Length: 227
Image 1 (cartoon, one colour):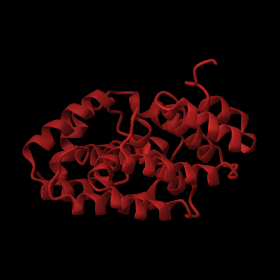
Image 2 (tube, rainbow, N blue to C red):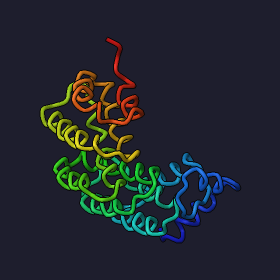
Image 3 (cartoon, rainbow, N blue to C red):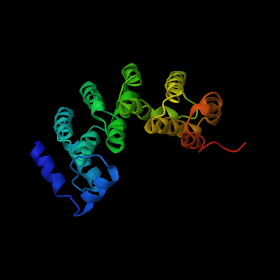
Image 4 (cartoon, rainbow, N blue to C red):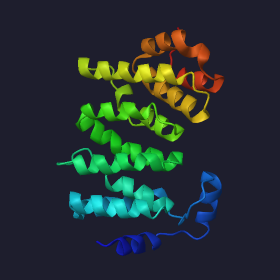
């Protein structure tokens, strides 16, 4: 499949009048086609089923470079899959996108693809940790979003528990950052963890909560059961 064919298939899914609303909602100046997410999901699912990994990487790279909103989402969706072997090229492409992040929707879709590759090879956390020291708040935020799978276990294995503590260490440093998106990312991470390990969230909040913005504290404590 050529990039032109992919864009033509996407263009066929445009809903008249939708692009204007998307542009107003996302507030980032770029081209919006006006495609509903379920339709984009179906299209990229079909592409994943018939393209090789190398073909998907090449197409995702080209779609990302267009800077079209839905094309960037499609690029991420093309690479969102638990089992990909080999996946070094996939991980390399996803991480190459991180400096381009300027929109939570695009960043979150790319991070969802990255989550699968991080679970496949947790040693990649060393690379992610470097993001926590980036100048861009979007890059710093991505370190929290891409590690969200480690909030999900009720009884994590020792290696996963160690990763959870590692990320909580990053979060403890982030609470001093007043950027809204960074505060939100900490609250989000703790909110999800609260469903599975509320005691650890309480301990974190006892030590760090006073430094968090009120909205982030509320987010972090949203799923804590009442004592």
